[in-house]
Structures are given as C-alpha cells and as structure tokens.
Image (cartoon, rainbow, N blue to C red; front, side, top):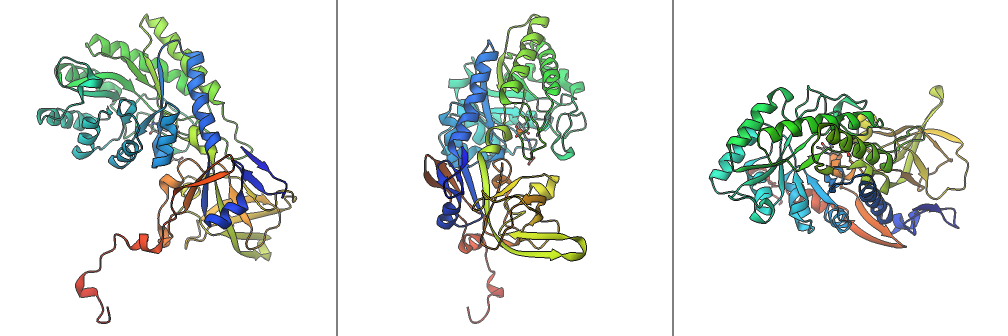
Length: 445
Ligand code: LLP
C-alpha cells in the first residue's frame, strides 16, 4: 500500500516516508504490514481454492527472520521454515507453533538438532551423516514430543530432502535442484535411504521434500517437480514409510524492475496444485498434505529501504554521475553478490520528472558497492530520501557490519502507525563482543 500523498511524498502504510526518515534516521527498512499479510492470504486462499487435500504454507524465514516477522506470519496461520539454531530460536521465541516448524540445513549440528527435536519441530533430513546423527541422538533419548509423532514408540519426526534433478533459469548461486547440488539425497541413493529409515523405527519419516531454486519465473519446473516427488512418494510407501506430506519448496520470483514479469502467487499455486493432483491420480495414490515454502514472494515486495542521499560525483569524459547513499552492500548485499537489479524513487520528489540517469552507489570502501548501476531519477541533491523498492527478502537477513556500519533499524508500518521492529545498532553494539586482551591495553586505559 504505497501512494503519493498531498505533499508529493511517497507514503507507505499510511506513513510519510521522509517523515519516517526524520524520525528513525536512515538507512531504514520500512515493512508494510498490509502487503505482507495480503501475500500470506493469497497463498493460503489459492491453496484452498486449488487443492482438494490438506495444505500448509510455511514461510522460508531465511528471507527475513526476526521476532516481529515470525509473529506476524504465524498470526496469518502460516508455518515457518528455519535453517539454523538461531532462526529456530527466534521463531520459537516469537511463539510460532513447533508443529508447524520445519528445520532445514545441510550441516545441522547435534545441538541444533536437539533443540529442533525436543521443541517439536520436524527435521528435514538432508544427508547420510544427518541420518546417522539422528539415530545416535535417539539412542541418547532425544525424541520428538509424542503430541506430534503419535507413533507407538518414541521417534523423531522427519522429512527426507531429495535432489530432484530439475534445471531452472536463475542465478547459479541460488539454483539448488540440479544433480550437482550440495543439498539433499542423490536420487540414485534414495532406495537405500528408504531402507535405512524403514530399519530404524526411531525415524518417523512422514514426507519428502525438494527445492529447486529461487527467483524463478517459469512454472514448468515446479510442475515437473510434483511428478518427481509423487514417484518417490510411491517408492517410499513401498518401503513401508508412512508418507503423508509432500513439500515442494519455494522459489517463486518477484518483480524487482519494470522488465521482470513473474507469475502471480495464484498462478504459481494453481500449477503446483494441479500438477500434484494429476500426478497422484495418474499413479492412483491418495493426495498428500501439500506443503510449500515461499520466502521471497511472501516478504520481498512488502519492504523498501530508505536512504539519505549524500555526495555525488560526475565524470565528464564518461558522461556519468554517481549519487551516493548512506548504506549499501552491508544492508543489501544482493547487487554485489548476484548482480541483482533494483528500482528506486526519490520519496520527497515524487512529482518531478525522471530526467537523470545515474549510478546509485553505496558508501562502502569497495568499487563494487553499487546499489543500482543505472537508475532513472529526478535530479537529486544531498538530503533527499532515496527509496529502493522490494527489499524485503534477503536484505536484512544477509546484512553485515562491513566497514563497521551499524545495521539499520526496521519499522513496521500500518494505517499511519510506525513501530520499530529492529532497533538501529549503535557503536556500543559494534563493540559488544569485542574483547581487548590485557597486554594490548594501553597504559592510559
Ligand atoms: N526452501 C528451501 C529449502 C530453500 O533453500 C529456499 C531458499 C526457500 C525454500 C525459499 O526460496 P524463495 O521462495 O525465497 O525463493 N540469498 C538469495 C536467495 C537464496 C535462497 C536460498 N534458499 C537471494 O538473495 O536471492
């Protein structure tokens, strides 16, 4: 819910963006509650419309994990996917139901697994080492609480993650489905995995999982994935595993720039559901509980980052201008990591013509720290509020303190109210974990 108000300022969630920056400083993540809730509902409603069986949407919280986001998502009835002890701990502290929490990762530690299992989360098992580790943990008395396992004997509730061998067009770094991937069991070994799980009653395998990649605009890969998963479900059932759930991962892309044209949430869900129903009908098996794990498409478009414009530099021979903002790769590492493109507006000049083509640079000591290589903007001056759109996914969650920049604050805006959900880091926060060995302390100190 963004609009231009009477002052010709950008307004989000009923809040005037330049005023938010005055109040909370910059860089500032501005998360719009209504947009996030609407995306949650679109997913939920679309599954209800298109899937005759049970379904569950779990938010891939790696996109942005903090107390307020977890609590908000949970209040919409969604579950949560976590990939580390830290994400799990945050979700649990936010009050997310462990029965709707799924724990991913290709190198979970024993301590992380113990926290996940005893709190009642489902473990999505990635590899052989983890299977053995789980058996060891069970032998040491670490089980899922009975409430969710409902089996005769104590056990650990798991899904198995497999590498589906499905290619899709996205950046190499975020492609996960092809056979050469560090994630999941190789299909050639799956039958021996099923046999192992069958022979270890402490492993209560209730489903299968696969994820093919992120920022995907095609629907065909997810259509194909349903068939692959149902084939493996049939196989797993032959081994006697009590499969009830199929988790198709996440991956739906969002629009960052004008030229991006992703399918809608509704369209994506429809393809996934129809493919799953068809695959099950063709093979004559009952519909599983259908789980999906969107991250980016839930939260990406719900947030913008507001920066204050500072210095600029023109290079006459290249006819090029750099406009520098007060953040950069520390609050949004996606451009330098994946060459991701973003769109920007100037929040206090919404009525002015976009006459300039400039390079928006960050303030980090690194030439590659470019926020937007070529942005169409009105003429800017120092003090203007430059807003980068669609920064909800993998910005805060991948933020760093590079160059010792404190991490920005985040506000949740709704109906004209702005609440801090992440406090801006201070210089003291930067020193919080620093220790100075005695022999390095100067005489004066
Ligand atoms: N499930 C699993 C097992 C995943 O690995 C991921 C993303 C998701 C779900 C959610 O995917 P989404 O719906 O957000 O596409 N840092 C990169 C993206 C990495 C995605 C990693 N896995 C970026 O900034 O583009």
